[in-house]
Length: 559
Ligand code: DGT
Ligand code: CA
Ligand code: CA
Ligand code: ZN
Image (tube, rainbow, N blue to C red; front, top):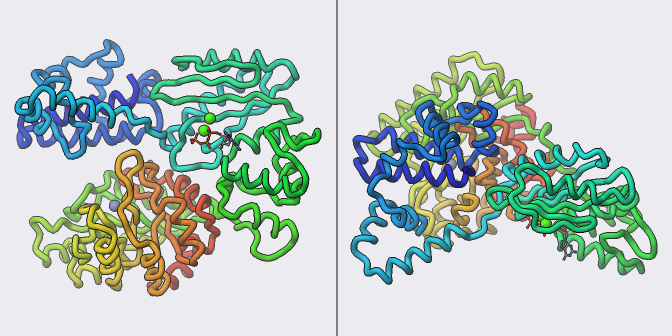
């Protein structure tokens, strides 16, 4: 059973509990929804973890759910799950794929709609389910590195690299492309054969002289290319792409009288490394993340000629001095999910990661059930807690605040005044129309404490498109008022998306990086945010949390 299937099953169990008795099974519903989320976010196949006896390592999978999964991996089914879902037709679960349809609605549809109409709806739902989804980068990276390890075991293999979108580190990956350098000429067949014997292969799509494709579980396709040392650089460059970059590069070669292809440059010129290839064309090396035909070739040419305005010196992971979105388990009766790790554990981990500072950004206390005074009291308690501890690194007292529909913030001024600074974000009412949404965001960012617009497009990968905003207006406002846009490093968000980061950087709008950590291991997701920043041409100076503590404080106006 794949993660996709397990997540679907757990989601169905949660829905079945909800249908039965929402109050009575409150905790089960929360637990199963959390587990679904964890499985969807997991970068390893649960079956593999189970094989290694590591199922309990997945955060949010408690002992009872783990025991049911254990039964499933052993016997193919769980009696407990069958019991919970008893009496609910399969079609009811299928219909849940339709937008805004829960199990209650789908049961009602099955009962009340005419048969022909049900058939139509089921077809629609199937379409949603079977829509080919692109794979989130970390998931593809994990699968790719396993396959690459396998390829290294072949005695004919000299070197392995990834290619395509995986090497350019796009947010999602269509298929995985891998390049192998073979030790000897004429040994390709052996490497190809070894590749097709990869244990998780479900189908060999194609196996030729230098190339092969296999299909792995979850519809993951892996394309392999085998080449010799002489052509390695040419092949690496060509199949890293992007297609658009290659077209522009070919044009630039053409202007110099050369013809460029995957086999090098005609007549008879092969390249062992990419550097040699770019240099031959009068260019400096271009980082894979920049190869999207966004002006990188022109800039590389300028740089090679010693002129100003060359390629950006891309930001690196070790340049990041702090994490600016972290949810601890400090309970301020939040509007959305609280973190599950303690503030102390997180601060210690931050020190290990080499940070100088972090910000605790729990969600604001919920509007429901709290008076304004109570909200302020909860925030005062958090402020005191942070102030009175001895932390290993600087800890900022921050908050992630929901933006109300009208742009106001659900925290009174006295509460806001307890904070060093706030993140503001959209967590509801996503379809307001472009102008109203823009006004809403600008209203929220006008609060003096609102410093960072978090996960600004509100997209969720493979789940929800971004909201509509007049980005020019947002950029302009940030620039004039010293407000920042977040690059949220959660692999399911990666928001701002790279293309908008590029636009922001062009205008000089500054960005922040935050992991949106809700569980301590998520602090390691920073690298995915760095990928996005690099794809958006960010240098150190474009990212506020590349500043050292004292400079950071000056930049955000904290004494
Ligand atoms: P993906 O798989 O959709 O995430 O995106 P890519 O970029 O990995 O695309 P893919 O797997 O179709 O091809 C890998 C690279 O091979 C691509 O980035 C550039 C190169 N390539 C493939 N087809 C063409 C083509 O028709 N023309 C050119 N110039 N390059 C190509
Ligand atoms: Ca690809
Ligand atoms: Ca491919
Ligand atoms: Zn959020």
